Image 1 (cartoon, rainbow, N blue to C red):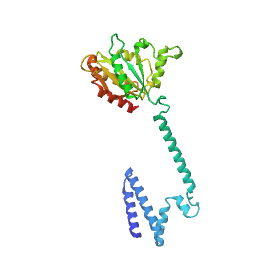
Image 2 (image 1 turned 45 degrees about the horizontal axis):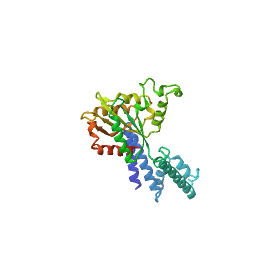
Image 3 (image 1 turned 135 degrees about the horizontal axis):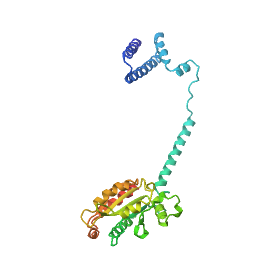
Image 4 (image 1 turned 180 degrees about the horizontal axis):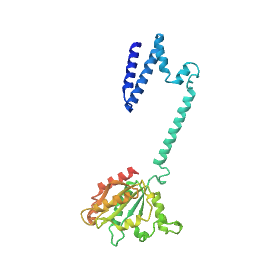
Length: 292
């Protein structure tokens, strides 16, 4: 046995000497050294002659601490106390309970939710023209959301707020105490919101200018990482698909998480009468609730 080990070690050493310097050589040296130590330790654990034990002693020289401990220069490693292991288990259990409590506080009526337990959903209306169809679309959407009982709703209508053309957004103001009251209020509502729905008609192959004029008053930091669904409509048959495409990239600039499902309503004057979009709207609500 000893002769076989010595021959294997010498053969590996000859290979290492002839091998040019490379990462593979270093890896091979490490594996050879590890194998030598393991074989030598096995040989020392069995009755061997003096020459075989010398091999084991030479192998132990690679680990000075083990050599010193074997010669009595270092104290033996202390055994773990059962009480220490019990205390460590108790600490681990306490950390697990704290994490569980934190997770429950954010998912079951925690500080991120309203007292009623439903997350806050803000709906932006993107049209200000006279005779606008967006009021009918918003009412249809509001009824479906209230029926689902998943959210607390807040509708932001630029007509009711009398939103002017943007001159200076709130995050560019050095002193917000002089900002218009509606601007401060809407800014706070957006901060507290957990999800959004944006409704817009299609104007000239894009979304309505009233929507961008409204949203550009506010910083992207209060929108970031929150889910948002898109609802578009058109008087023709395309359902505002080009507006939805433009909205997707625009809303992503605010850091919003734009969800895959979009509700596009063609022939808006007639489409809502028969609830023909009920299945898509139901999917949109479930998806938004899941992301929240």
